Length: 183
Image (cartoon, rainbow, N blue to C red):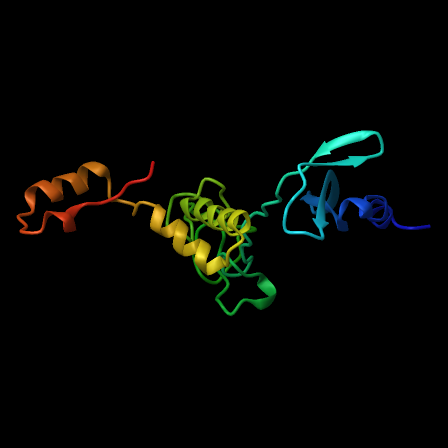
């Protein structure tokens, strides 16, 4: 008997589906299946919906979460290919894992007062935006990163602080003091 994923792939083949993968989550150390499937289509253009049995199901682009290394806590690679140093995901200190750590929370990626796995982290949100841009615009990671970075205001550069600099700084060429902000 065919495995369920293979059966679904076969049933949806006429609609351009070439691969099916179930999204899983880890809870209490166990890998659990969710009700969500990732469908791979044989074309660049995503259909708005598919028909499965008697149901018409809407299709949307799958945007994975940023990949974070469980060794060095940096984004973009996994523990198996890491060349970095073992760093705690809780306190950002080198040399121990976060399992039994009780120190003050500090993020490796943005130096904020939260763990390195926090979804509230500025660096995590930026990484997610880079991945989203890459997928939606169908460009390389480097191109997406450059685009997102160019549209992201520099932390610490508020509108007021830049405006004050523009007004107080004497300059023959006023255009060089203009900034673009995205809110």
